[in-house]
Figure 1 (cartoon, one colour):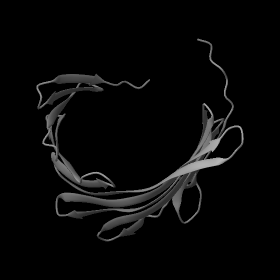
Figure 2 (figure 1 turned 120 degrees about the vertical axis):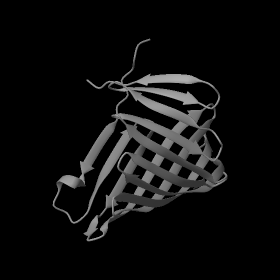
Figure 3 (figure 1 turned 90 degrees about the horizontal axis):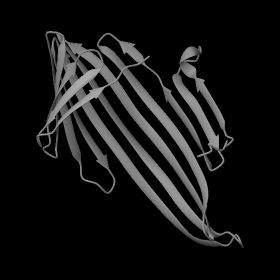
Length: 206
């Protein structure tokens, strides 16, 4: 199949390399059917007990397409806010994070021929996630609580061990599914699941 060139635009700014008092990045993508603009800002505060990093972000997405006699315009604006922190209590390294986002979206249908607006489909959604993790020597664990509007709360976690240079991870989630994974060689991973399935993944970067 012959590929057709579809013009677009792309721009990205990494604020980590600047001398500004904040870090983050700005990204913009545009194509013939829509655009996406995203900005994320963060600032790390170091202290005697550890560090804390508040973050804030905003995303603007727009898409336009024609479906038969209808022109469909979709927009979505998302605001994100969160905080990450880390500290140490004796030999235990502790990390914690919390974030939340709110997305306001709308889908507008108009008549292609007349441009008359037929109807709108607005929606507001939220997402929250709270996590905590700890590491002590060869042992580690993390636990997360996530909630998306319209869905039940999901709890998940992971128990990890490093034995003889091999990592063993046991993820556990609130849906009672568990699996055990072993790192095999350089870039390989073997997985065993509750349902009896066995999988092997391999990834190599060149």
